[in-house]
Amino acid sequence: MTKISFGWICNTVARQGTEIKDLSRENDRTIEHIAGIFPNLWFDDHFHKDNAPTLESWTYLTYITAKFPQFTVGPLVMAQSFRNPALIAKMTSTLQYLTGGRLILGIGAGWKEDEHLAYGYPFPPGKVRLEHLEDAVNIIRTMWTQSPASYEGMHLSIHQAENQPLPNPVPPLLIGGLGEKVTLKLVAKYADWMNFTFTDPDTYAHKMNVLRAHCQDVGRDFESIRKSVWAYVSITPDGEVPPEDKEGRFLVYGTPQQVTETLRRYTDVGVTHFMLRFMDFPKFDGIDLFIEKVMPEFS
Image (cartoon, rainbow, N blue to C red; front, side, top):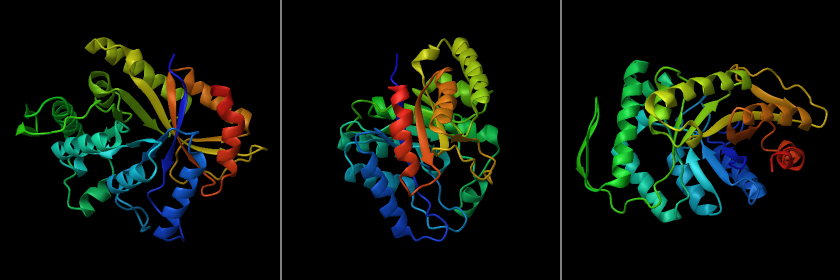
């Protein structure tokens, strides 16, 4: 059985009313605080949000990876539409070499229209973006294992692309997204990991049934895919109810016992890794209570 593990999601967007120097300092303090306890660091991939100072995720991920060499790192998830997939293959191969194999590549179709248009990227319909994602995954996987590499896709292609040094080991590939018809089929065909964001346990269980069916259709072992979930956590000794999330995201909240019970509902349907962001950041109250009372229940 795969051990249950936990990762912390670094903040790439400064909190309201703070400066970018505060963001860097607060992240560093938290990373130092969880070193040796949380093995993974994750970075969301956005260019701007609510006019707040924002760090570009791949640059920041690379910086943090060098600064804190005890962690495995990954984008959660990299929007394939923001970067040429051959470039992604080269970037990830380089980082995998330099870090001795500490990268998990999370990738998705890209969903935030305003960022695409603001930065001059096209934002085609979802069907086309998912076709681009499949091409991107095939290009990246091909370039991770062959040099020179060639691939002709529906929209994207490479021709005798050199990629030395090849990554060794090949990074795990995580595909993020909830779409039942296409995205989860891509997970079944290509992914080592999968991820859902802000998904309640009942919905997660339903999506697992859909993924299982796709795995049967493509001849994939469902158990070979590592299941993960991104969750916002509010944990207090008395189970204080947090304010309703303005974006409608599912929140894991309550006493340590209540939080444990909620996380158990995920592990019961196969989740083995939790990517967490604590709602009282940059304070340590929540994360310390989680480490003390919740994590031992999953050891």
